[in-house]
Image (cartoon, rainbow, N blue to C red; front, side, top):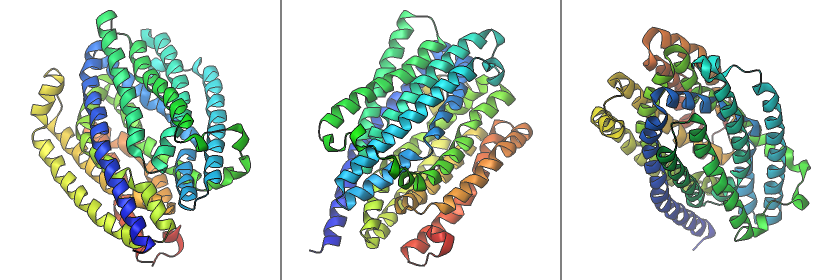
Length: 445
């Protein structure tokens, strides 16, 4: 039995085991996420929940401050393991932890200064009397998220080693703890935006602290971050690929997160709740699809590093079948959407059928793009994605505002669909060029 066949078989078996485990684990997280929506809405009311969604959409911009280091670590760590360079893998882990800790610590210090001058009521289109409360909530949430982004590197390491189910388990524990705390708050306190924000952010951070301690003292002891292994000279290797992922990540935030902000400004915070209910409903499918996809990024890196293109092609064919099944289910979900909303969040919040339709289309297009971008990310060939992301990010906000004013909430989503079309066309072309060894110039970068 040749090494290529053996490696491919082991790679596939490992991916399938992780998919099966992740379906149960992520399924639990998805269920908890669905339970959190009606509980949170009734705890703070639809308007305040919409304010929280919009605020968190802005605060999550802190994630761009990692300048793609997390994704850079994911590929470099997987490459080092594929070549058996364990010490280099630890250097990558230690250096990334060190750099990201410095970045996030500095960001929090700067935010403390800037936050005093921000009028959050105006930014979120919220009642003026909430300005002081929102300022404090923003400060607390920003600080916790800065901590989270450093601690989440543990999940990056697990995923890079083709164990996404273990990374998902940490997320599940965080969601369980958050749900438990919020439920406790509903029984012991009046609706508080601060309590809601702390429960949703601090609970996952606490789980990640424990996870880092347990994992890096156990099986991953050899890869545990250590000042002894910090090599800032290796930053360029992490950043060369990381900066490209940073641009892609920045564009994703411009597209995904600004929708909440634009809707809040154009139509009010309550409409953010309406949009997010529809988005969370149809995102169930994309979540399941990403569970299936998640083990393959690093597996593709391993296969590409070892020149096992046959395994890559076979895997893509199988995943395309999964995509078409998901696309069919998306439109089935559309036909039962009104009935599902009524059971899930009650009849007091009405979701237009047109909004459900455009969100369904948006989710399907994103899944198609993710299918090919995961393979390209695994190859480390992301230059086309960078250019598409730049174009999409720059065009999205003005187009979303224009269509939002002309059409309504649906127009904001339609803008997101329009700027996603570039990737839907170009990513499959690049993938085919690479696996058929015809990629030249920008197609091979």
